[in-house]
Length: 180
Image (cartoon, rainbow, N blue to C red):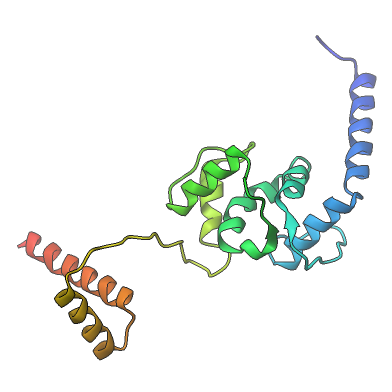
């Protein structure tokens, strides 16, 4: 099926008119204003900054017109959740992407946005170059727990930081031993 140039131009004009109307819609202005206010986007047109939380549903709607908001949404949900009114149940595709990002894994493509792009925003939103930590729990005997507490107090570090430091030092020692 081929279209003549006048039909192509007519379709383009209709699409442009629809886009212009949609960009004047309150939820478009709220979402873009919130992203601009948070420093996540720069708009090429004047937008009033919006400080109130926005709904995920509105972001998904605006994402059809402005894919940049979809690119930022999963990482922003993890790193700056106060930006949003988060529903009890996220859409299945968004939930899967957020779960992958929480584990610092590359997610599947999300509504036309490549997984690698989504992952790249995780370290650039919120606290820079900081990826989400993952919960690990261990069972320690009472003596080991007391030892951890004493070392923590002596080094003036949290118990988590003591475990991290010990793990790094042990790994460095073992890696050096492997080279010999």
